[in-house]
Structures are given as structure tokens and as C-alpha cells.
Length: 194
Image (cartoon, rainbow, N blue to C red):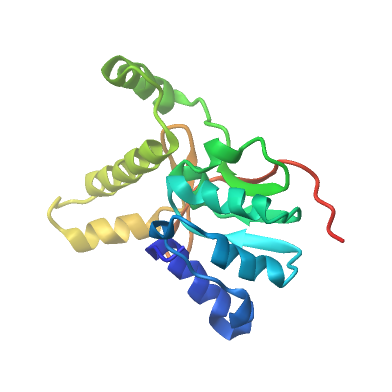
């Protein structure tokens, strides 16, 4: 999908001809009808279709592929699960998607979840947990500085974090300072790869 999220994957796939350009298709959610893009993709007889993007309506792409009789595997990125499209097709066969590992019930989770439920009348969702944990990491880095307005020291403190115990998850920070949530691949059904 031609949002920022999808565009990053497209550019990465095209880099060093990882996937040939003729096998990469872009679309927008405004199209409303994905038959043209999906028909072109299916005509190449792929063994796997990788769907990259973030949005609630991405499930329509999978439904369109299904209408076109595509029965092989569809692999989706995390944006599919986070964007909400997963809920519409979770029982369909041949989908492999990334998901967050189950919430870890730790002391900080227990201390936050009760007040969260009282305030909002529901459990915290994954997106909120990520944003909350990112804020907690920043607060932790600020609290470790001698002078709270020394943003260079705050940045240094953030870059020194390797693992951070957040609400319901341990966050790993890698050498390029990306936050890596704990993920797993979920296959809805074993797929015939012939």
C-alpha cells in the first residue's frame, strides 16, 4: 500500500533487486477496487503474496485475492494486525501474519491495568501499550540525567538502553536504536507450497 509503511517495504524489496520490480505492485486504499492490482499479481502465479501496509481496509485485498481464486499463501506485515484488517479475515486459510507475543503479566502491568480499566472501561490494546512503553522509556532516560533539560544526555541515556521492562512486555533496543517489540509469526493453516 502506498502509505509510508507500505512504501518503506516496497523500496526495501526493490533494493538490490531483492524482488524484481515487475513483481511489486502499489495501490492505495482509495482505489476501493483492488481487482486490477490483484489480477496482475495473481497472473504471475506467485507461490506467496506479501501484503505490506497499515489500515483497517487491507482485508479487502485478501478478499479480492480469494475472489480471483488465489489459494496460496498471503504473508502480511505487522501493520495488518495493528491496523485492524486482521479481524475481518482471521478465520480465512492461508494467511501468515505477525503478531505481538502475549502480554507478560509483570508488576508494572498489574499496577497500570486496573487504573486503565477503571478509566476507560476496557483493557489496554497493543498500540496503546507501545506508546505507553515508549513514554516510560523516555521518562526513565530523563530521570537518569543530572540536568533534566540536557537533551543530549537524555538521548545518550536512551541509546544506552538494551532491554526495558515495560507494561506487559520487555522492549529490546538494537544498535541502530530501533525498538523491537516481541513478535511471532502466526500461520492460520498449513499451506501447500507446490
